Image (cartoon, rainbow, N blue to C red; front, side):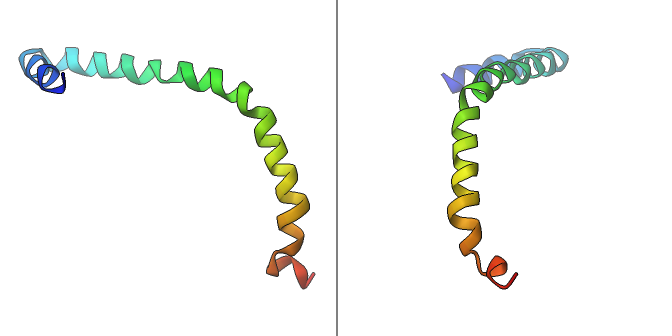
Length: 64
C-alpha cells in the first residue's frame, strides 16, 4: 500500500501533495481533542499520587 502511495505521490503536483499533508496533519487534532477530556481524570489521579508518594521522598526535597 505504501508503494502505491509513493507512486501516486510522485505523479501528482507538489502543491497538491502539500495541501494533502496539511489536511492529514489537521485531522490528527480530532483524536487528540477527544482524548484530552477522556484522560483528564487519569492525569489528575497520577499527579495527586506523585505529590503524595514520590515528591516527599525525593532527595532534593528531604533537606528542605
